[in-house]
Image (tube, rainbow, N blue to C red; front, top):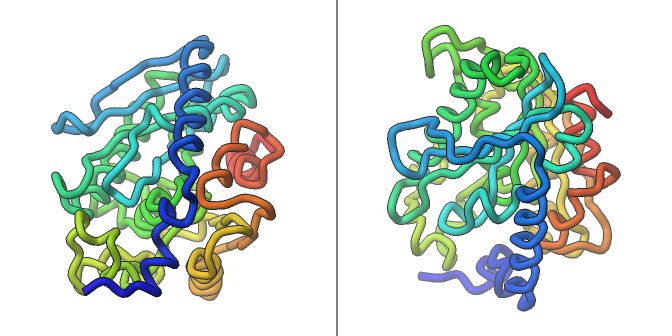
Length: 282
């Protein structure tokens, strides 16, 4: 049964009727960036399924830090082509940036999406030397459900996940409008395609997990978003801060769940600035 009050808190497309135009703006910005990017490798496979690919945008630098961006869409929509524009200021500052695809619900489970994102990070760590990246300086960011996947990655036992991987593989994370306790989504329209039960929601909720390291985590959201998104980030910041992680929680005024991402091509955008600082380029 759908809980109307909770659905209003989390149904971003209903809350922002102009979202098709905003998604179109992301796509246009991304197409322009991809046409201009001087060094790029597209559709590189990081796993065995057709969805497990990434686009790599390379800076004019050797031994450069590496950043991975995870798109949002409630685990059921969008792709890497829709938001690759976020790589523009990071590449300009001297970072190599991977923008990844992953399988979408209901074709795959939310558990499998988490595994795929971990596999992409493991691939980047192993392949960094080939494309001039520093495997000891890998950070991640994501928007909306991409923020949840950031948290899952930062709670990963990397030594258990893959042979030779360091326990502190991820050196920092930035979440934009992330979700860290998935239980509130169970009785919303979002879950129709995702298909979570209570156990699935719990094991995919970073709020209740142990961070793998003390890598910093920045949590940002739009000031015009619902109280639920503020609660998600503030609660995650408090929980992981109590576990020894340096956390920052900040609302970005005047933006909603979609426009919060639109400005990330600007190095002064709070989320972009946080990424650059974690990469050592800010």
